[in-house]
Amino acid sequence: MDLTLRLRGLTLSHPVGVASGTFGYGKEYEPLVDFQRIGAIYTKAITPEPRVGNPAPRLVETPSGMLNSIGLANVGVEAFVSHKMPFLRSVPSAVIVNVAGALDSDYEAVVERLEDVQGVDGFEINVSCPNVSHGGMALGTDPRLVAALTRSLRSRTKKPLILKLSPNVTDIGATAEAAEAEGADAVSCINTLVGMVIDLKTRKPVLPLGTGGLSGPAILPVAVAAVYKVSRRIKIPVIGIGGIVKWQDAVQHLLAGASGVQVGSGTFANPRLAQEVHDGIAAWAAQNGVASLADFHGG
Ligand SMILES: Cc1cc2nc3c(=O)[nH]c(=O)nc-3n(C[C@H](O)[C@H](O)[C@H](O)COP(=O)(O)O)c2cc1C
View: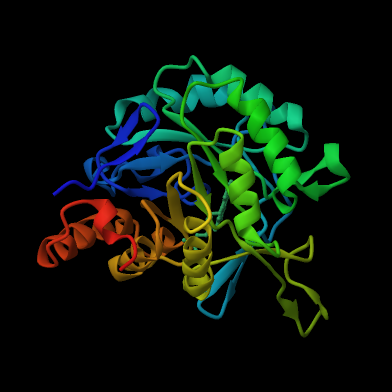
């Protein structure tokens, strides 16, 4: 049975990865997981400089999900190369670096710095953060800005380039088409949805910045619909993310048109979720006579 996912020159032995921001830099999970059964680690977002992130509380539980407002806390690209890559190089999973920034030049700087770093297998571009170059608007909300950033990054890397789409738009297919047209190798979707929780005692939002990103089982149907819409608009692979807490959820993503999946906040409740999803997909495929990932598409 062929469950490999091919992205440019990179072959992922199987299609289940762990989503950015929910798996640290990998080492945190070392005692708990079998990296042979995790196709790819999508790292926490990396920016040129270290970031402390937003004030606490940064998380709040919601019905069937959670809101986060981490503020892209990360060690910065230099510490990532010297302190985090040595471990990541030692595991069999592919390493896809999630890249973020407040300026277009931040993305360019991170990709350029990591292009020749051994063990970095590809880039996933997070266009959901507020971008100062464009008046604080998230790049991912405007297909023209996604196109321009994809073009610029494509000229800087020969590695797989994945554009991670925001669901906080009217037409997610348009941003996917923009990424494809400028040379992205795949898109991943979805990032979190904007949400707010208000504390009745203080009469204020629980998260200091007001809103946060909604993830978890609550967003599964939104994510499956996004994968379905996007995969009908583009030819490059779609990597499904959102709401996966069991293997059946991942199979829904694959049937909707995804060529691979990422497991996100479900890992917080079950650190071995990604490998269990991998095993479940393989068993389901065997029982249903599915010979390759492509056979999932279209149901
Ligand atoms: C605590 C937390 C931190 C996250 N950090 C990032 C990040 O740095 N970059 C990014 O592209 N997505 C980030 N995400 C979004 C996830 O990668 C994923 O797209 C989203 O949570 C939906 O998947 P899920 O429902 O399986 O959690 C984060 C999500 C959570 C819960």
